Amino acid sequence: MRLLSKLTCWHSTQRWKRRVLENRVVASLVVASEVRSLAGRSATAAKEIKTLIDDSVDSVNKGSTLVNESGQTLEEIVKGVQELSEIVAAIAAASQQQAAGIQEVNNAIAGMDEATQQNAAMVEEASAAAQSIGEQATKLSQEASFFNIVAGSPGASGLSAPSPPVAEVLISPGHSDSGGSAQDGWEEF
Picture (cartoon, rainbow, N blue to C red):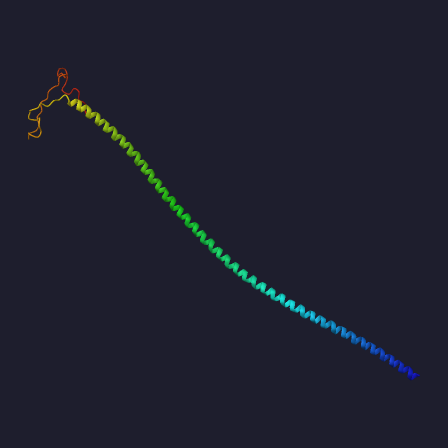
């Protein structure tokens, strides 16, 4: 019995060991299955991460390209602004030159206006002088009407006689010689 009891004990120990071993194998299989599943998920996650990293690298490269293009665009804008400021400076210089030219034209017009006014004054003076000369000529003609040249005298025709003309002076009827001087009716110039 002892043997039987030993054998029973051994047998139950073996069963227990087998169960423990079976449990361990099942647990190992479950763990292996979980490890395989985790490895698959890790591989999938690694692929996704690689894809995300590649996308990020592409995005960074595109961003870098855009930054370079933006830099070039900003350089072109700066050049355009510089060219525009040069054009504005040229326009300002041309405006100053035009203003100086306009001032010269204004000065010339003012000079012409002054000369025109002087000419007008001189024309008025010449007109007054002409009128005065006309009046004096009329008076002289009236005064000369007192003198008559006798026809047939040697000075009557200036073409026939080479000698200087001699005129006989006759006092017109209405003019008396008495009491007055020879210069009555004459004005001094």
